[in-house]
Image (cartoon, rainbow, N blue to C red; front, side, top):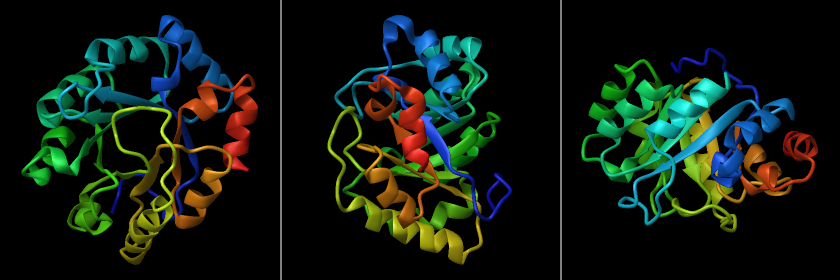
Length: 223
């Protein structure tokens, strides 16, 4: 059983700080909190697992000092256990890693759990959702990428709802409370598709941080 404690998880909106203004990051994050966001999604890239370099432990530590919001940290790195330990120590609440980044996912789950954080696992569009089935009971969250991990602003992939539905059905069949998150191209239109497929945690970057009315953008994702 997952540790979120309910069969039907409440909807969570998690704006991705990758789309925030890094020159005023604390202010931008505060603005989405006031606008009604539930979590902050933090994309951590090392320039090796994906060809981009973003936030690291120092920025996560600064975010932790600036906000009390739940920090949902998505690791796109080649050594998620060692890097995840640093992210956990910096103040992350949940650390997710890619299935394809490791040889022994179970050991990474155990290692991150020992750091006192919730644990998630991520799959890119090229992987089958069923590959996550052996780990569902041990995870607090699974993240289905509806774009290829590494860059924000990509177009939502039409195959994503079907992939989400496969995981949602299995989570329901096992009577788990594991959260089902989707990231990539989520907006007021695609949010309906992924919610109908069973997603309960929506990561939205441009749709929220790029909006002149962030409260409305978040309300539209919930609608």
